[in-house]
Length: 243
Image 1 (cartoon, rainbow, N blue to C red):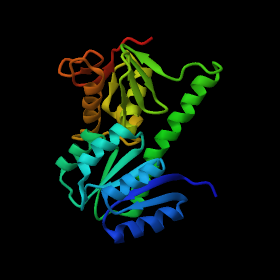
Image 2 (cartoon, rainbow, N blue to C red):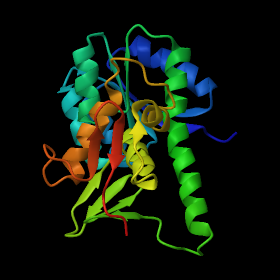
Image 3 (tube, rainbow, N blue to C red):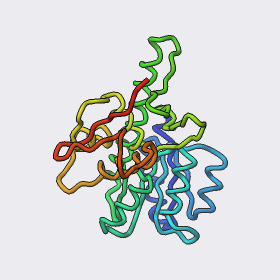
Image 4 (cartoon, rainbow, N blue to C red):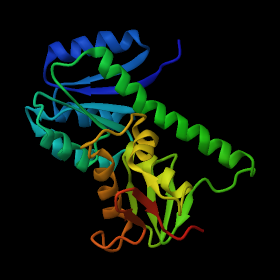
């Protein structure tokens, strides 16, 4: 039976890892288990994964710091797991590059829905990019704007001087949607749907956090953006020069 995806669970709670191992294996996911940061790095040195479930409190490392390192090294999706329910932790996690955030205790079915949503976005983008390139017999799969080239398949930004930046799954989905709709003002609701598959709710800062993260990566001066502009009271518009 074909695997639904490879997931690395990083949590020092054996009860949690045991529960998720049994539940997600039954849903055809291939599971790797790590109970510490050291075990996580050892696992990633041996194989690549599609998604990492990462507890923010580990015996040998801080999950937020690990998120920053992982985001610079891998294109795998990251869902943070926390015992805390404070909004500030969720905001910090998203700002550092996580794709989603769940709190303990959680319903396995709810977590499964989030996992499927993230991995579906990867698959949808790969299919679209394949369609984009297939008709041209191998045309470049990258999207170019300003001094950047963006590869939605690998979630990588390449600057004109050769510097490479790995985007999170949500950053990649958001940037792709905005580049494809350059010059069109996009509402938070539309961007939320394109990025996470969920509807935007009042006071939800997910889109704003992702926009801020992208600006730090593509703008010469994030405080005075020229590529991704705010349209006050409406949403955002991509104004970068496409080529």
